[in-house]
Image 1 (cartoon, helix red, strand yellow):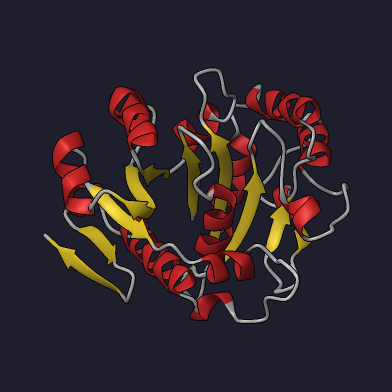
Image 2 (tube, rainbow, N blue to C red):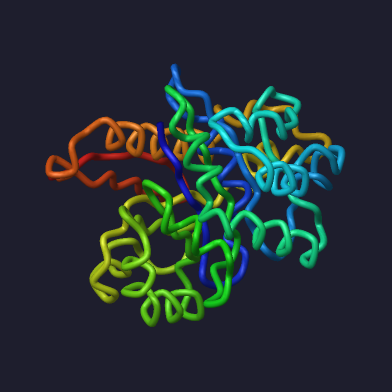
Length: 264
């Protein structure tokens, strides 16, 4: 019974791909669904050649008249691997209108869905600009994963806005993506705990993104394995009383390998 929001503050560090990988790698027994809440428009419809309906637009329309924990599932489509998704239209205007409609309900629709036993709602919030309606999702979420490249421009935005971001989430987690400054250096300079670091893995990202010609299983890629570790960590926190959340998953990468450790 978990609602996880994923977003960024700068650029495109792979939020949608990470949302898919997190849901696909969720521990067995969970029932994940990915909901596109990026006000700039969705990517899944085009990536996987899905239909425009059902999706976020039909969900927002239905939420005006009825509610309940099963409503989100009535507006899903299935990716080739079977993962259910609620797709947003690629156009920003239509997507933002749908999000505004859901915002009027305080995004209880996603919370209701996450309240079903075993259900995990992963909300792809895209870039979290100051006026983004997706902030309502992060405030309702049990956890927020903020993704960032480990480069000067992206980290400058994190340094400036992390206190505000952390204040709008019950459990904020900072995740680095790809190459750049070392993890420990970023954590020290920004005074932020780095929960995980996703590896630079173009093949793994392509497999998760459904690109033609990529037939390797996403779960076998370095990126897929790392996201599965992160999913397992979040899932374990979801069943742990808040006062016992004393561990931080540290997933490190270098060009040759991926490993993880849990430290107290």
